[in-house]
Image (cartoon, rainbow over all chains, first blue to last red; front, side, top):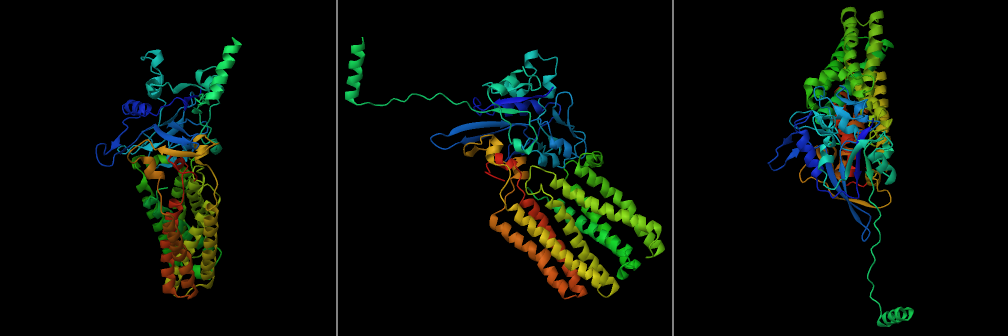
Amino acid sequence: MKLGLVVDLDTCVGCHGCATACKQWNTSGTIGPLSDENPYGKDPNGAWLNRIRTYEVDDTPNSKTVNMPMSCMHCDNAACVTVCPTGASYKREEDGIVLVDQDKCMGCNLCSWACPYGAREIDPSQGTMKKCTLCVDRIYDEKLPEDERKPACVMTCPTKSRVFGDFDDPNSEVSKLVRDRAGKQLMPELGYNPVNTYLPPRNKPVVEMYEPRSVAASVKDWVNKVISR
Amino acid sequence: MHPAFSVLIFTVMSGAGYGLMTLMIIGHLAGLPQLQDSTVLLSGGVLAIALITGGLLSSTLHLTNPKNAWRAFSRFKTSWLSREAVFAVLFYPFALTYLAAIFFGGSEVTALGLLAGILTAVLAMLTLFCTSMIYASLKTIRQWNSSLTPVNYIALGLMSGSLLLAALQSLIGGELSSSLYTLALALLVLGAVCKLVYLFWIGKPAGSTINTATGFTQANVRLLDQGHTSNSFLNNEFGYTVAANKLVRMRLLMLVLAFVVPFLLLLTSSSVLLIIAALLTLAGLLVERWLFFAEARHVVRLFHGDQTV
């Protein structure tokens, strides 16, 4: 199994709902708390496992605003795990989820240096590294109804831009989406082979423009129409 | 990259200590006449171990959860940081055996001293190499991910070590050994050449761009919004930016402090000036290490709006 997310850049509206839901769930989840430093002060700072950035792609008048939510990509070739000196970072054999054992981490930051996606952040109060768990404490929880065994970010997304599934199964929804919509990996040149995949915005059908015409042309069109009847 | 002062101190001090220990052992075992004095050898060994220990202790200061630091020995097979930790600790018993052999048996090379000495020198260089590979193995930082990184760390470690060795020998032995003096001059030139090659190499544009980072490779991409209104861990750690003119001034300061002035002071072949030269080199290498971090640009910056790294 290779669990991960597909993010649809066509429909994401950049509401930050996934980031908020993630923070809410994970501050009391297996790796919790997910603390903040000075949360109500002048210069608040804190650990988030999911961040949304907004880009302008191409130039006016063809420019488009793209919202790009980013969390851990659960890379196939996870350098963050290789560099970890304590064995706190590990990638699960059974489903490919990359996790940090909070009891082993010494807070050297090396894994965050090795991650190209900015997926790892130090918890300011605990001093250990925090990262997306793909809500490992939700997706296997048999006490939850079956359709709720999904990461919190996927559950909350109001536009259904986030899809969770198994990339090893060619018939899963995520695999189909990646095939049909030509899903892309971010920064593939580094060779980390990230599992999370991004669906590029669709090419919208061209909207017909109203073009004012001369009176003569309009009359000619009307005459042609009448004659043809 | 944010330059953590504890890491700057650690890499400069331990680099000098390992360089000093290695060169001293090689000189001693090779029969260099000025290094057959047990006072010189013992004080050199103590100085090297003090520098290394001070550096290693300083390196633990940047950990945010140091109570788990002992676990850093556990991933020797995969992690360069773990290898560094293992070799750094393995170094001590051999270095202490070597120094004990000199302390009790004098500067005559015994079988035990020979074996312990060779192993000490090898472990010192291995540790220094592992330290540099922590940085060189990161594909996310183009300015570090190069074989020039270990070359620089080892060359500069040996260079500062040779200056300390020459200074110590002239201080205790009374007069300067010409071979140590020539060695220090040669290593100063070698270190400067390695550093200049590195500076030219990182000036060449290459690597990931905002286009490969976002996947939009056929159009211009600009950041509109970082998504957070206040600071974040990522900004603090990777967003460290220094004005370009300050970087140029720091580069000049580094070249002057670490290489040019010590070289000129060495040419006077005076013992007192030699000590000043060694201290200046250490100060210059602190600037060099600061630049090593300040000029390194992590690819996460692309997501935060940088067009290239």
